[in-house]
Image (tube, rainbow, N blue to C red):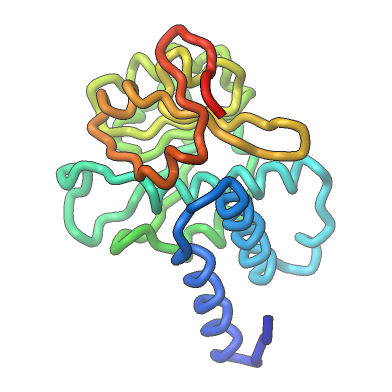
Length: 216
């Protein structure tokens, strides 16, 4: 990757970023590559201190990459936005595992014509104002209540605790060895009025309410 000074550097970063998200997700390797490239693009914008990362930092940089990629492969109903230029709101519920540097870089990106807004809310807050709600493992005991409270809304719920999608969440991030994969509850997505790209579904394990994950 060639980095040029000044404005050219910013343009190169934007160009490489756009290249990352323009490719079609035709295989599991493709989505993992999206995540890695996402993390690289974020770290190019970070201060030198951000390069000193522990394993947990790497894990959550990849998880944030997945959240961003989901915005590219999920279609929300048109009435989910107050205006054509309204932001796509990603809400982190409870303790925020991502950190300001990664989230700050994400806020400079867009999903379609929509800028991305990232905010942290309490489990007791009104969450149906969010297009996406991420429920970290630290809020696992609140997951069932959060999912039930969002029924009837067009909110994409994403979790990382075992069984999140089975209990009615839409997507669950699931580590397998040194890989990060995800489950999708299609019925939950349909109830929310969300359309998920076939390319994304080809990478997922499909699960159903109250059932165990199936498929590859």
